[in-house]
Image (cartoon, rainbow, N blue to C red):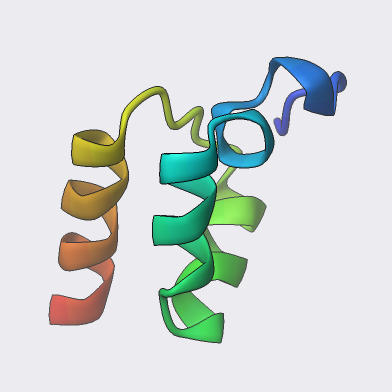
Length: 55
C-alpha cells in the first residue's frame, strides 16, 4: 500500500531520486506507484525500473 504521508516518500522528497523517477517511461512510473513499493535510494529505483522494462 502506498505511503500515506508523501512528505516521507523519497520519490517526492529526494531531488535526485525524483529526477530519475520522472525520466522513466510513464508505464514504469505508474507501475511503481501502483505497486506501493517504497523506494529509498536511486540505486533501488534503477533496479526496479530495469526489472520492469525487461518484461
